[in-house]
Length: 82
Image 1: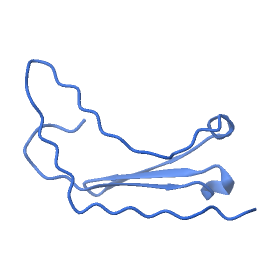
Image 2 (image 1 turned 90 degrees about the horizontal axis):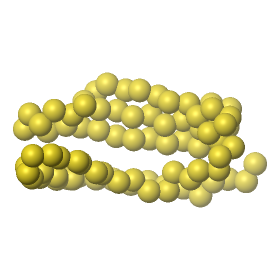
Image 3 (image 1 turned 180 degrees about the horizontal axis):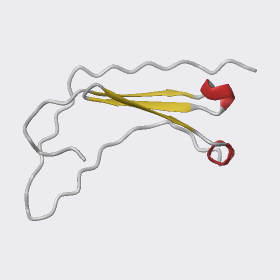
Image 4 (image 1 turned 180 degrees about the vertical axis):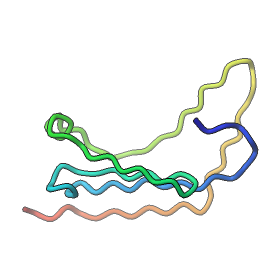
């Protein structure tokens, strides 16, 4: 949960499709804390593609939300043939 405390937060998402013996891994870093998630065989077999990223903030009570994304970088590569 990201609390609306007015602070700036640093975050990153790193997806490596061929990590973990080809199962794939997603590493999420938020304010210096890192969590790595390894896909399981069932998730991999589902055929999902990590091809976009989005933000959605659901607020109740009539409040508004300011979202600022700054200093973004994006890198990608073409998968190599096995």
